[in-house]
Image 1 (cartoon, rainbow, N blue to C red):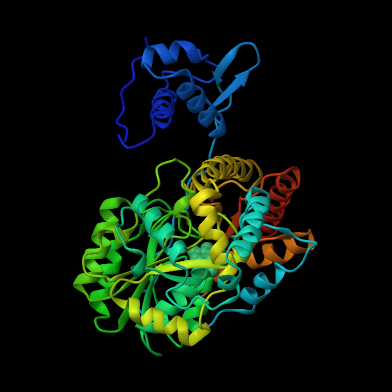
Image 2 (image 1 turned 90 degrees about the vertical axis):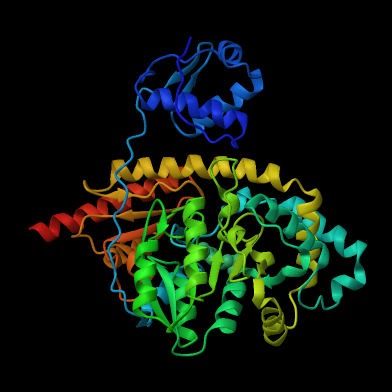
Length: 487
Ligand SMILES: Cc1ncc(COP(=O)(O)O)c(C=O)c1O
């Protein structure tokens, strides 16, 4: 009989709990590499769960590269457990607001996306092969036929009611009880964040952001004439609340908004705990600084347990929650939304002024997909693939990159943050990599003043032999740089 201790979150689905218990035994060395694990039938008896639950759990552990199936023999602990490189350590920035001036490299990285000859590891786009393309387009055609006049008319802010109802229903899973009237449909998540910044700030104001941060936020801050106040974040738990508190006190009155990616941050992959989300909301409330929460990756948790959002703890309407279906369903449909709390009317007005309305057909299609397209089923399958691929890419980086390289271990999303030894210059690496047909995102574009020069962000949304070769090439190029700098 297996002795299984370890604490597990009771809300997890049963198969995750079973998988968690087996991982616990592997972690503690009770089950060692090469050991046979109990047969599906035995474990189902021992744990009094169904055969299917154990099958699901074992398949999850295969995805996590802890178990391997041997034909006719059963499941074994992998002889070589993934040896993940250490996680990155992120620098502490100055806690003073700074003007943003993004480099030419940023423009170049954005332009790379148009180059069909490059293997795209630099931009955080989902794997198109994992999107429900056929089904979505069928639904789009059907919805246009069903609602011909609505499809060609303005759907004025707050936007399509059926879609807002679907979004409100799904928000229950993130811990929010909101009515459709508290949601505005936007053109992607980017528009939701821009509308928020325009509503909350005027030129010269400061915005607190995590560092490193998704570079488009820096671009927005620059374009709106704002200043960025960079707050350190860790690859595990996200923004440092102590540093944020200190920075808010030092810059009292100057900070007019704070942008946080609470779940599976881009680029670090961090996820804040529920306690920290609650503390964040209270801290910002106390300083009367609105929170712009970007939860675009929240649905891509590697476990089936959808994390909560900070908005769930918002009692005063101080949180503007922004998201979209760009990472999960169709970036090209440009369907996003915002639950803007006490700023709802201003956001509706801003949307109306800026673009009158979002295109109607994509709203109809996404509403139908959420209602009848099997969105949850779709999420379950893509989450698994992304979890497996992030682990595969992390492993490959560990093998190919110079000693001392660190890699994030996200629990959701599909980007990896790679911190190489100090002697590697990621801009040089970026240029060299392009000459080998590979596009990457150099670390310096994720901060105000070119920090993270020895870091890169990679997109792990696809795993194929060409990607494996690219990782190998990047590792060799990084090692060459180190060797030539030590000569
Ligand atoms: C954190 C974050 N927010 C927003 C976006 C863009 O979202 P959308 O395409 O829905 O405007 C991205 C895309 O990379 C992102 O990573």
